[in-house]
Figure 1 (spheres, rainbow, N blue to C red):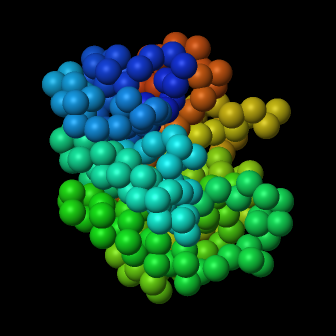
Figure 2 (cartoon, rainbow, N blue to C red):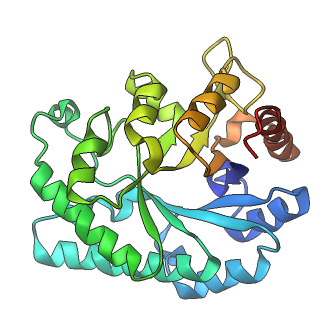
Length: 268
């Protein structure tokens, strides 16, 4: 396993072109690049990131998904075509700065009735996942679906169904989102199993406020043991909010905390 930080952890603090050099200076070795707007989707911006990222390895790319991801499943051909044009831009850029995986949310469960999943049309969603996977593969990038309370994978069981449509689909376990969903994270972990490639990490204090790993009450020892039990050898990426910490150096300290646990269990 390897540790790192999502650039989303500095959203509203720094732009990506400032964050990656900071990671390099701090000694943070791995990152997920969180692209946040249309001007960042494409080759020109990607070349800028490549030129300044230093020794930071980009594990994955993530976007502000509501900008076009839900429209990739839209039944209106023109809407869907425009969404795919933006997907192509993101993938072309991600290939340049070296991302291996695309952390994907998918549809948006905006209407209250959609949360239950009773009306999920898995034939349509599954075909969409297959088409999106095909587009990503043209750029050497693997689609990985994240458990998100308000999006496609909002409950255990969804991932297994979508894997029947696209066996190459990979998974992203988000500890925070599992907590919000009301399902134990181990249910998501058990379902994704060997398909898991990324874990988004955060901690929570005794008051229920999010904080950096090692600053709260979350049992990281048990998490690492469970990850080892499914053969996970991917990236543990800290994904925090700007209000979850004070100094940016704390991000490196959180990585060091996780690295010590990985060494403890021989998971490096």
